[in-house]
Image 1 (cartoon, one colour):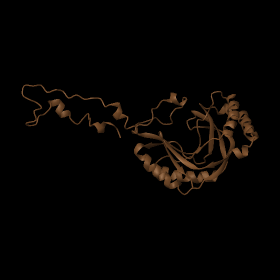
Image 2 (spheres, one colour):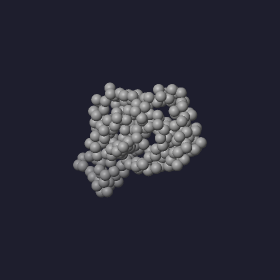
Image 3 (cartoon, helix red, strand yellow):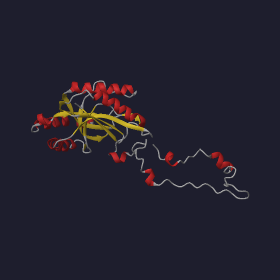
Image 4 (cartoon, rainbow, N blue to C red):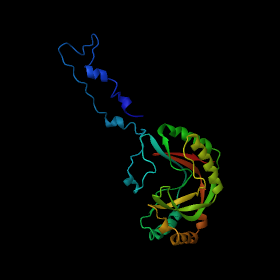
Length: 265
């Protein structure tokens, strides 16, 4: 909801009156003979009123400098909300210890690599939702997820990924067990996407947990020798088999700056 209707200001509702002079009604005393009518004065809307409505249809400000140089897959437009469905992963201390070994080694090949701020496994591509579609979309998604049970999966295969535009490169851990359960989840997510005429997930997805990323296409530097060395680090890490066996507890939908969680049974 915008603040303008609240205070009743309009740029078009009274143009005839402003052009002809304020039209008088009998006995209202607003325009007496021989007197020039006073112009209407419009006062600015106080910030205290505007701040009462933070949930406007406008999405977050589009400033790539605030996101490490990342460029949007699609330009931001008023009322359009970038939306993504995924399984979150809360990293344990031992997992971060592994990352503290992997990342510095990878940075010897690509120094601009940085650690992911949060960890997840994608169940959808990033799509655009109109603001008024968000709640119906989430409700449909919750209905589809309601019957799914929690499950374990393993992600222990180091792999290099890029986004479709090849503007970002990622180091990830690919899922090697639990793949069928992920496909079942994606199948239901895709059904919701189709209901809203949105893009479904990839035909042959590689489910993975991204660890680090950089701007640009760095596959040439990271694949080959570097990839083999990173895999050796993972394979030789203490208790890696237990550490990289993970548990799904919920599916999450992020739309703009809003988050919606759907716990699994």
